[in-house]
Image 1 (cartoon, rainbow, N blue to C red):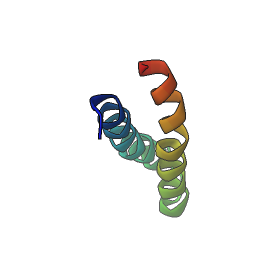
Image 2 (spheres, rainbow, N blue to C red):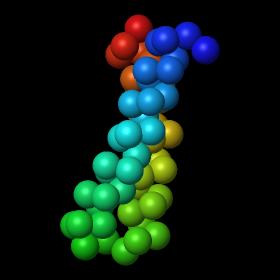
Image 3 (tube, rainbow, N blue to C red):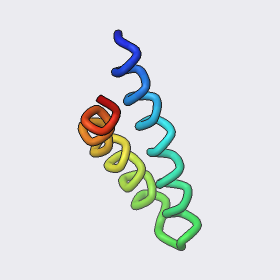
Length: 53
């Protein structure tokens, strides 16, 4: 695994829980917050890969 890939994946792993936590704090149900965190982590990988590279 290259440093570029590792950095993009690590940033996505950090982004998911942050978005999920902020979603819970906004008053959304837990299931919705989990989905928001998963979707943000999954959706950010291609963007981060293009942005970092």
